[in-house]
Structure formats: structure tokens, C-alpha cells
Amino acid sequence: MKTYYSEHFTIGENGHLCLDGVDLVEVAERFGTPAYVMSESHLRENCRAFTEAMQRNFGSRYKVAYASKALCARFIYPILASEGIHADVVSGGELYTALKAGFDPKHLHFHGNNKTVSELEMAVDCGIGSVIIDAFEEVDRLEAICAKKGVHQRVLFRVKPGVHADTHEFISTGQNDSKFGFGIEDGEAMRMTRYILEHKHLDFAGIHCHIGSQVFSIDGFARAAKIMFDFFCRIERELHITMDEMIIGGGFGVKYMPEDEPGTFGEKIDAMGQVMRDEAARLGREVPEIVIEPGRSMVCAAGCTLYTVGSVRDIKDARCYVSVDGGMPDNPRFALYQAKYDAVVANRADAPRDKLQTIAGRCCESGDLVARDLQFQTAKAGDILCVFATGAYNYSMASNYNRVPRPPILLVSDGMVREVVRRETYEDLIRNDL
Ligand SMILES: *Cc1c(COP(=O)(O)O)cnc(C)c1O
Image (cartoon, rainbow, N blue to C red; front, side):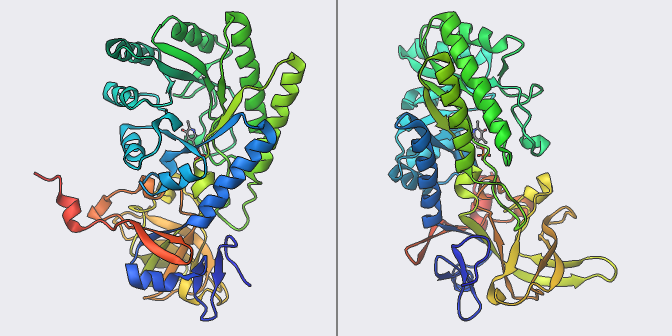
């Protein structure tokens, strides 16, 4: 059977694109467009693939923590919990969502280079698993909060491993010139360690890094793993302490376009595992508990977006613009990074990809495109377009620009579709207007 993008997308006898056997054209008719659609089985497969890769490398001493910022809404947390997955949050809003979804706060950790005092209080109050410190001032703030409440907080802090991930500049974070983390070479990371240890309400548990996002090469991960592990051992040796955990971030690249070859996340985890086992043998010690934080790679491929084509403008000696009823409000990634997406006409998915077209959004911005110069079925008004791989950084980055209500998220499970985030209404848009 012909598939698109992943084996979860098949084509029915009527030529309609299906997700896990559910006809996406019918979904568009029933729920309207634009709409995000997500495969629960694909999401669970990803959870299990991460768990298996970690198990084969680190035995029982690992955690997989989903990076909430890729897609944060209540429905996702019970699914993650049932697969034994932990999560990170980067704001009070994400923390609130996870808690309201009934997620165990002990299975959460809190990131951010500038968490507010009230966010830190909220984290301490709910009994969050750990806070990943990313500023000297934050040490003082957190100590003051804990001292006032008479509680201890488990903390790690963010290290800059000095690895430059070969990805887009805005999503590369491990290099020296970064607003995140403390450098090893310049002594800042060691200074931060000592500083945390001086504060008696903070329980120092380990170190964290995250080199960037949408990284394809195995090499960057392996280098970061070695640098981090060596530094971990150096802290223990020089300061005569023991730590229990090392978080090595997310960033596993995914396939957006048919020609992308991101490799698998399993091969990257294997490479990190190998490096750490080698280092552990060389230094005569055990590998500490290892935590990874996949965001994009957990949800991206499991999601797609459905749009309705409104108009087609074929400009002579220029481009053919296919305009859809969404765009940068629901997917700002072209506008932000000139990200690439693949798409098909869902109601003629079996037809040849016969024309070079540009999918344009509905906003009053020339930069509002979904895909530029993409070869797919000749589109006409009324067609349903399916854009693949929109599970990550779409809903979570969506805005109401041009006062456009945000689309719903529809979850496909066991051959059924249900709304897990409802479509915003015009009333929602003015709710906070006084
Ligand atoms: C964004 C982020 C992640 C997840 O990155 P992905 O590329 O989506 O896997 C993990 N850890 C931290 C600290 C992040 O900021």
C-alpha cells in the first residue's frame, strides 16, 4: 500500500489520505479546517522507541523526559505517564498544564534562563522533581524561597559543553556564545557548582546540557556526552561529592521532507551510551543515571495539519500560490526559520505530484508561507491539504495573529477521532478584552 511520510499515512480506495486508517477528508468535513490531527499510536511508538534505546544503553538507570515546549496541552500528559515518560517544563504555564493533567510533579523538571520568582515558588510548592538552574541570581532566589518555606529543592544546573550543533542558528544552544548555561573551559561551571553547594536548602543532584534542536549528526551528541561525563567526574573528584544524574538534552533531528536523512534517535543514543561506557571503564566508575529530553522527535511526525484551499493564483513567470485557511498563526515555522514542509492534496492523495506550487497562509504578510516551491498534486479551491510533520512547535507556537482563532487538536486513537483541544471561538478571542 502506498504511504506518505510515515507508515501511519495510507491512501484509501477513494484516493483519500488516511491516518491510522481514519479518512482525513472526512475528518476535515466533520471538524472543519484548519485542524491539527495527531496519531496516538505513533506518539506511543515514539515513547517506546526512546525507552528501548535508553534501556539497552543504560539498563534501568535512565529517564526519558519529554520536552513540553514542543507540544503542551492536557491530553498529552496521561499518555506520557502511561508510557513511563517524565517531562520538562519551561514556564509556569507548562507546569500548570501538566499539573492540571494530573502528571506527577516528581516526574517534572523545570528549565529556563530566566524563571520568575512566582514560577519558582509554584515549582517548589508543587514538589517538582528538580529545578535546572541557569543563573547565579536564580540560586539566591530559589534558596530564599526554600528557606522561607523550610523545604529543600533538588537542583541541577545547565552546562554549556562548547559543542556547536550544525543546525539553524536560532535553535543551536550548546556553543560558547549562548544565553544558556555555564562554560566548562572558563571555569564558570565549576564556580556555579561551588556556589550551589554553599546554599543549604538546595540539594545538588547533577548537571544538564542541551546542544540544540533538529540535529542530524551523531558526532555532536557523542562529543557533548563525553565532555559532560568528564566534567561530571571532575566535579565529583575535585569537590569530593557524589551526584546522581546527568541530563543530556534533546535535539534529535526529524524528517520533514522526503529527502531529509536525520538518522534515528536510537543511533544517537547508542553513540552516547558507547562514549559513556568507554569513559566509565577508563575512569573505573559507573555511568550515572542518564536523562534525555526529546521534544520534537517525540511528537513531530505523529502530527499533521489539515487546511482547505481557498484560492489558487498562478502568476506567469513567477510562482503558483495556493492559499489556505491557516498559515503563520497555526504554523509560524516558515516565517521564523524558513522551515520546510511536505504536503499533499488529501482528497486526491493517489494522483501524481504534478505541479510546483507554493502554499500561502491567509495573513497579511508576504512571509506567511507554509511551503515554498513544493511539488504536489495540482490544487484547486475546496481541496483539503495535509501538511505533514506538524506535531512539534506548531500548536505550541501558534498565535492569534490577524485575530485568527487557534485550530483544534484532534487525536486519532483506535480508528476513532476526538477533539482533545477544542477550536477557539471569536468569544475566546475577546475574553480578556476589558
Ligand atoms: C527545547 C529543549 C529540548 C527539546 O528539544 P527538541 O529539539 O525539541 O528535542 C530539550 N531540552 C531543553 C533544555 C530544551 O530547551
